[in-house]
Structures are given as C-alpha cells and as structure tokens.
Image 1 (cartoon, rainbow, N blue to C red):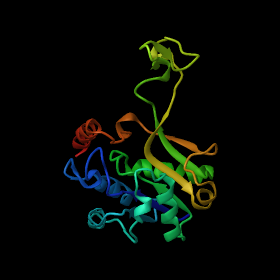
Image 2 (tube, rainbow, N blue to C red):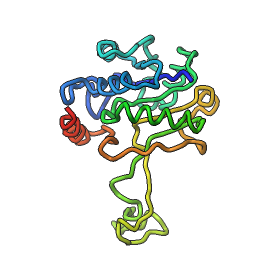
Image 3 (cartoon, rainbow, N blue to C red):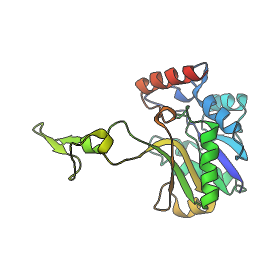
Length: 224
C-alpha cells in the first residue's frame, strides 16, 4: 500500500500569526512534523499542501515535497478539513492511502506515525485516528444556565474518584489515516469504521493558543 503523508499548512492564522513557520524550540513549527514524517519507515511520500509561498519554501528546505500550491478557496477559515486532503489525492492519484499530519502537533513522533500506519495495515482498516485521554473527565463537566446555575453535562454524571471513572478518549489531532478510495467515497476522516490509535498526553499537545505554544515549546526543549 503506497501511503502519502500530507501536511496541511495554510498561510492564514488568526490566533498565532505565521504559526506554521514561527520558530519553536529552534526550528519552524512545521519542521517538527516534516522531520518526523521523513524518519518514518512506512511512508512513501511527504507532501506539504499550502497556499503560501513562504511556507512552501520552508517546507522544501526541510525536505518535504511541494508539488502544487493549494487553491485559495481551499485555504479559508471555513474550509472543511477533508477538502485539502481530497484535493491532494486528486493531484497525486497514485497513492492508495493518506496520513494527514497537522503541523500543530509537533510532539507526535515517527514511531507514532509508523504504529498508526501499521495498525491500519494489520487490521485492513479504512480509517485510523489518534486519540488521548482528556485532562478533564466529562463526568466532572457542567453547563451554566442563564441564571449562572450549573447543570450536569451528562445525565449519568457521578462524583466518584477519578481512578474509578470509565476511560474516555478525545481526538488529539495528530494522526488521521484513510484509505484513498474510501475517503473519496465517504468524504470524511472519521466514521463508524474508524479505529483508534492511542497516544500519551505528552505527545498529544495540539497548538491552538499562545498558552499551548508555550507548553509545547517546553516539552520540545526537553527532547533536544
């Protein structure tokens, strides 16, 4: 199975300007993902999908391929995440599967990449996504009413000890594997058939805010 690593990196970023190429722990953010993908033993190509010439230049410098620039209409805030993936598969039809690697997950390792792809191949799965345990359990979550009263998020909510709570998992954004034909048909990266690849919290940081950035940089500096 010929597998494409696709790294989506559009130029627009409102929360952290120029996020994908900002320096973090000594290199551009996107470089951490490119290097992890290039170190994988189960990928057949590492491509960056971007609408931005500066991001493309950085990606090429760190060893990724940039065989096309993404159209502007596929680089908007409201663009569904699956659309750039489908566009890439249209440009590169020879691949049998795609592994989406968001650059905002710089702590994901090449071992995680290979384990995810291996799981898909061993189980003949059409889709695999990475997950981790959330910091807060939904049994301890509430909604606030208009009068500032608390309502349980879950009807079955209890106040048991954390160690007695059932395990819950959340998408961590690091890995999205899909069979190419299945993805073209389903047009989604997550479905009932999707398998879970579980990652530890220290490799599951997804950078969305300046605070996330500081935390990720701290952990990356410990790796150097």
